[in-house]
Image (tube, rainbow, N blue to C red; front, side):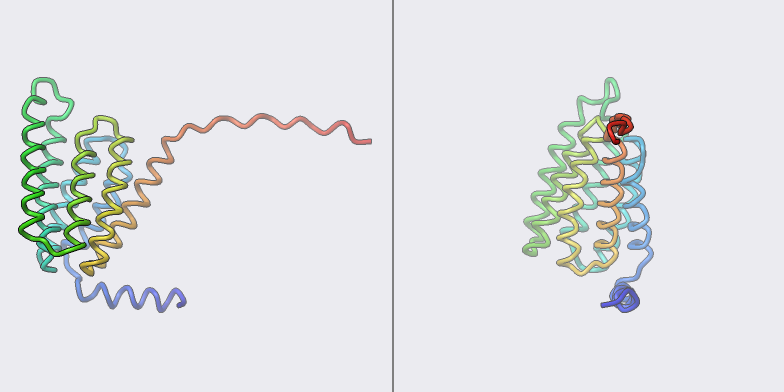
Length: 194
């Protein structure tokens, strides 16, 4: 398959699910992955989850929609409260309650493997939002994005799958950008030649 036919196939598949929410979610998903600060990652993630929640609703993917609603709540709570003095006392109960709600919603909207992938992605993302360190957050979001890629592949969300690929790419770039690089040792000239 050459590049032109691949692009045509992608655009034909995307046209059936073309909506504003999927488009915005796609842009915001990549943006969240490359954001330099924890607060910006969470704000972009909340906006992305809101857009994809609406997108999944149009596809009839109810578990994905429910997990996105919980993601918005958790991202906003984490953005505002995790690490803030005097506010963190009520964060664990909110996250525990939202995780129980995610489990309940997964059961009542169960649709097999897509639901399992969405639930696992939501669980990993919950762990990510509880992290204070951006790199640890990115690592957990990477696992969550891989699970969501499975969900999006199974429910036929071209926007979601494309967003996952871009989000994974952005997260890998951000993770690699933070890896310290040791300087190269200078190479001594080869003076032993005759």
